[in-house]
Image (tube, rainbow, N blue to C red; front, top):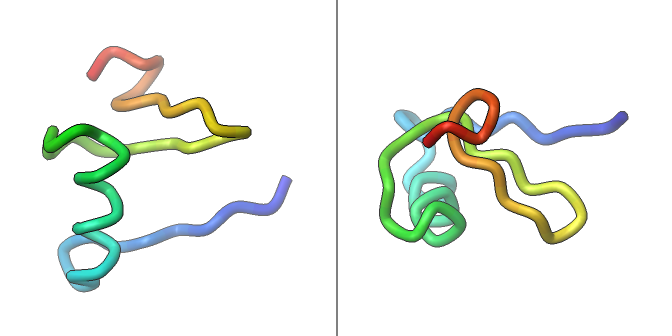
Length: 45
């Protein structure tokens, strides 16, 4: 399965994108798959 890794500590645009998906939460990982957003490991974020 193809994926995109973004290092949000080094990529300001990636940080902005992560915060939009996570509704402002600074929790990683943020996984977006088919329009579904999972925050944190096992969705526990």
